[in-house]
Image (cartoon, rainbow, N blue to C red; front, side):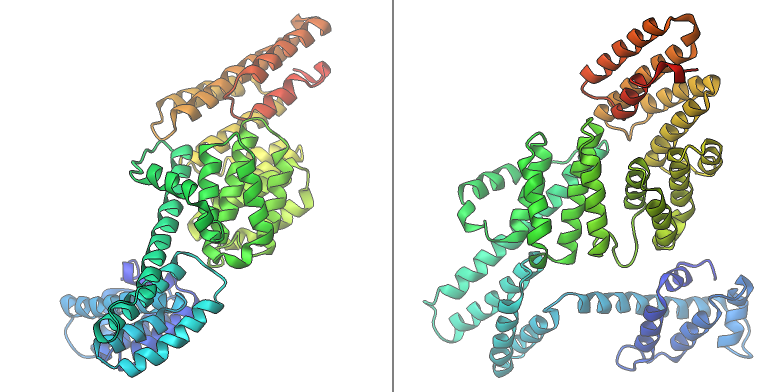
Length: 485
């Protein structure tokens, strides 16, 4: 039983949420089944005990003292508790959304024909909505339902010719749809860029044309401007105006955005910088690092107190690359426990290896990197590239050439890497192999001849559009010939 999904989900709750779930289960309004309450109390009491304390026969004896073991009987109680847990999640989620309680109070009063409650409470909700500076999709959703209810109430009982409320209903419905359509298209377009996925966005082109033709109607709605700008930054990547608009919003408009929209804005701004860096524009390195620091200060890099392993990696990589070693080491240790538990060791070891590499502690870097497990494509690509640079720094030509060939085959065969990414990696590996061989056979060249060959290689790298990690190749090609091996 200690490995059941029920126990697993309860274990994943914070201590505060465990206490709230216990209160929920013990409330006679939500649950009057005594054995369910006892089972939850027992699980919470024994979560940190040895697994045998939560074995089914042991738990059964504690719940049904003196009765012969009946696994189905225990299974039934577990099912009751699992359903109660699902109800608890729904109740907690309902409470997280602002204005929900007021709106559903009005709808319940309307359904029960308690119109005095509805008219009185609707004025309070309208006041709260006017005070709400965050106009996200949920804001439009609440406004739509409020005006929908008030409009049909007024039309049915009073003035059927009144149009203002219905117009507000339609306008808010449109804005809710526009924000949600743009937001989801932004996320899926980003996914298409990063992974080998495609989507049919159907009405998106028509929506974009409509927005561009009616921009004055929507230019003061921050969420619509946000996601429109983000989408344009991906569809028109070479135009930096969209990125500059995102930066201005980060500086001036955060108070008008929900935490989710704020995190989205930071995330898409990070991704734009990353794409520019991968395309060879190193000016965005400092830009991205400052964005991450700003996001950490505003608490918008974390979500529910957790940091994603990819943000953790990007921040640590930037700090190491920019030689902010002390800050980066402190960051790695401070935020290690804020990573998803099943990702902590991989993320920490990879980024520690990267830090050691940048500090030129190459053997320590190898020790850390060899602890990284290739759990997905991103870890495989990132770790292999870092291993390649480490072997290069150690002048281990045999290991390096073997790794380049193995990496090349992996990239070509992997179906989760887009065609453009494959081209970028294979171009990199082709140039890296040429660089390694030039450095390895340096003694067969004169100093001048070697410099000329390296300059030719640098020119080829520079003139090739799609090369992953172009900056590293150029740095090594333009380095001093005396450092070769």
